Amino acid sequence: MNALIGEEIVATLDLERIKRLIPHRYPMLLIDKVHILEAGERAVGVKNVTANEPFFQGHFPEKAVMPGVLIIEALAQTAAVLAMDVLLTDEEEALVYLTSVENAKFRQQVLPGDTLHLHVEKERARSFLWRLLVRAKVDGKVVTEAALSAVIEKRPR
Image 1 (cartoon, helix red, strand yellow):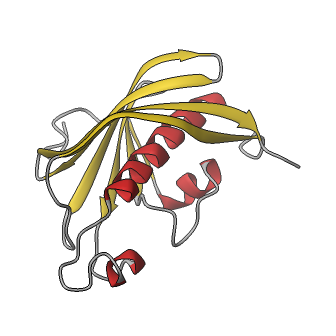
Image 2: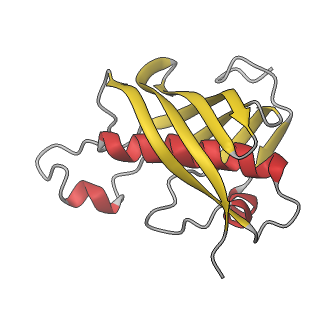
Image 3: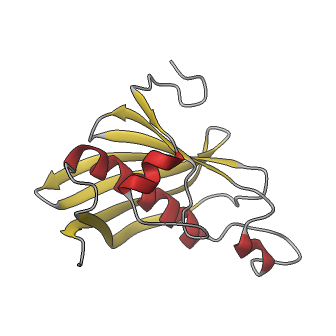
């Protein structure tokens, strides 16, 4: 049982594994690791928010606040890792595209020094269409929540 997550972790994917599963790279790779709670069903990503993030230069110079759209992106990246970890036999053959964000709520600011725990849970999946319920937490408190839909497609050649 992991004290921060409150659940059993069955696997942890490090940054190198994440980079093999999704194409994002600095400065757009927004997750540091992913804990799989149930393969293909539930996961928790981790994003350590630091004062050195490039977006803090402009959002906002007088009071650094992580943009909500980037929290959603970090949640979507965690969801993509969850999906790709179980669906792919050839990691070079598919990409996950976000198709909708519904009912997004931003309940608290995310600041430098915070650690985001990015909870994703598959609500349903039909072939290569997925719908996930997502929540970002800081210190156990929900800061962002939404429902995401995504499609998994072959990578362009």
